Amino acid sequence: MSKHIHISEDDAVSLCSRVEDDFFDKKSINIDGKGIQKIIVAFANADGGELVIGIEDEKKEQVVKKRWSGHLNPEEFNGILQAIFILNPTIEFRHEFLSCPGLPGFVLRIYIEKTSEIAKCTDGKIYKRVGAQSLPVTDPNDITALAFAKGAVSYESTVLPNVDLEEIVDSNQIKNFCINLTPPQDPLAYCVNEGLADRKNFEPNCAGVLLFSDNPQAVFPKRCGIKVVFYDTRLEKPEREHLKKNMMISGPLYEVAHAAAKEVTDVMSNINIMTSEGMKKISYPPEAIWEVLVNAIIHRDYSIADDVQIVIYQNRIEISSPGRLPGFVTTTNYLDVRYSRNPKIVRCLAKYKDPPNKDLGEGLNTAFQKMKEWKLKEPILMEDGNYVRVVISHTPLATAEELVLEFLQLNQEIKNKQAREISGIHSENEMKNVFYRLRDQGLIERVPGKEGNAAAWRLAN
Image (cartoon, rainbow, N blue to C red):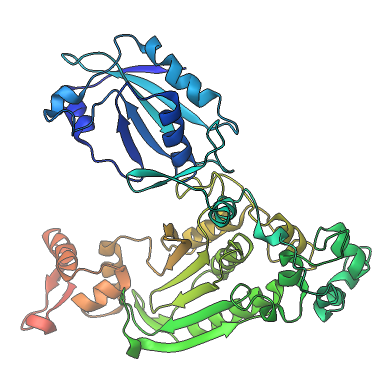
């Protein structure tokens, strides 16, 4: 059901002057159904967006307030709404009517959701939002790439006619796997029944090779590996001199996951960090690292010729997975929805005797919960270009004030740099403000005779 919302003149002016971008567009009431569909489809094929109808273009009307030019009656927008309702596949959206005292008529605001499959206009044309434009997608390769990116089509099902089926059915990986099934199965029968090989021509697909080839990198040199990098620094942008490890791990997906997790653990065992209890070996809940790593492997877009990357710093781990979030998954709902871009890979990995994706659908939720149990701040998930990146920081949940006092219970004094290291605060001035707040409460005091870089604080007498 639509809503009628009254907004202030300031809000109306702000809406009329708002700059169009990847997530916002505004149009005159004279736009036709074809033009509406173009914009709606473009937003749905990207990350969703907001469209306001009833605002004139700035090129036509220079006075901002006069750009507001809506319909006298909300029912006059029925044709526009009907143009959206008839789209197939259906696009999820919600709408509301805006009015403002002193400005003419109603304006229609529409919020469009990202779709899990390719959205099309009624004439079959496909568009995608890029900046402030709704651009056509006509090249077959671009349409296929869009389908892969949205998760509507998975590259895991792509048949590989130039690869012999023996690549997987005669591998040690699948033999060891099938003998541990209950009951044990023949490798060929398993591959055919699980959709890992074409039933007619008996040719393997991408999922079959990634899962069970003993040497998948020979077929997919840039799709089956995990790159592990270690920079011995806390800097956001490390220098070349900070690079201490740069290695590639390749092999069947199950083996790659375990080998990468072991490598991360080995690297961290040699990192010492400052904590409120003094210098200690860095440690994260192993379940959190494992779940984020497995999630990056099983939900990545295998149509992109790049590897999963794990970059380790002194105070954080960043795991990047090729491909954007699939379907209706967004950076705000990823903990609440379940969507598998690669169902064959997910299903087969779950059948291992010790499955890496044991709690199906709970991976990232487990990671967040474990970080909380360890009193560390929750991971941050973001889309960075054509990648999904998860940052696991070694930042305590305790406030900076609590950490300073905890440190001083075990140490005579604390300096600004030490306090920043244990609290995760980057700014020296922000850390000074923490000290000043504790000083004002009579909890700490400056150490006499120490100034400049040597300045330090201690518990108040």
